[in-house]
Length: 202
Image 1 (cartoon, rainbow, N blue to C red):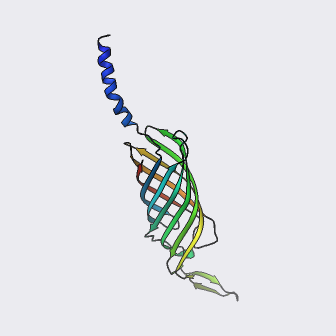
Image 2: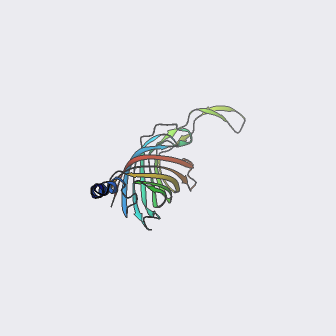
């Protein structure tokens, strides 16, 4: 048994670096990610997104901040309420991320942020519907909306997950909800983004 001990220690020393690589750090001092995905509401659309993550506490606490931006396009939905968009840019000037789980290269976060949106709306008309005029006459009419580029303010809440399969690269996914903080009725009061992509940590 004692003769086998040096051999066992030798193989354990060889395995230690491999084990360290198998469980890379889930939080980096600085990291950024790119995503592709989709936006829900007012209708489905393609989406590309980017975020920058800067650690402001120790790795054990895992609190980080940074800007985030998404661009959605290609929607093909209803014209009711004049909400069909050509494109939508949503940006958090500051998004905070709080780590709730960090283990085996996985980092699970909840997020909150604030920023603005800018949307381009098509010229459009609603489906014909019954309208009662002032004299009581009922007619069929459509609501018409001019093309418009409009800005507004937003708040963001959501969650994200990173899985580092090596020291720098991670598979990353997120889901956020944006809440509109203005009175532009052609923009929905709440919409959701989903994305998956890659994160590079330093």
